[in-house]
Length: 285
Image (cartoon, rainbow, N blue to C red; front, side, top):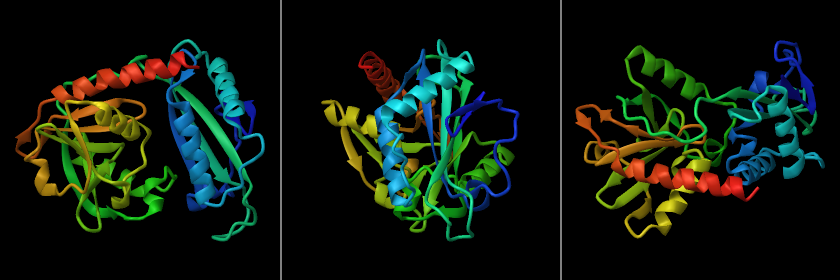
């Protein structure tokens, strides 16, 4: 089942058509949310990011788009798919309503929610081979649009195909000044000694929820120093660790970049703290 504009419909039914602006122009935003036993991990952060993004794109926010009402819709969707007692991925897509060419006829919006099962209720550390390479065919723009979670992901699609064709598990993306911005599916962190570094939003990286949580954890730690600064490709092979973060998997350690192999001790430590934060968020509901 899928929630389309507040109504549950069969996932194989026709509820979108060729006039949808998300399809035509990528005029859409989305949030991917992790749910465990009905608890939406970091739901307030996801909600606030979505509202801020809608305002930036001049989408009209409906009066009933409260945090409580949308969470209720998601809970109803989880129950309809028998996922309320399991781990699940929820995708919440918001698109401007049909009409117009580049200039829309309205700023009113529609939305769609979908849910699929996940294997584990906890963030798990993968320790298998995870090799990455730079993707240099196209570049991330250094502007605020790149920090939003929009449906304009053709660069990430092309990069994912490149990675598969060349036997990599992921790729790192560059901006126009050839700085490392993010991975195909998440933010990137570099560890060197006791310093943990991640690109600033000004470089064009996604304003990720787990990025924000890892920054908070590191800033509170006495063991590490957090640095938001540009990362040059030349720094990658000098790092002690590299890892990727996103809402669904938490933290993924990179095991190899070119000839350099990396450990994952810091990633393991931070993943434990991230799981603790997720549990606290659940207890606060």
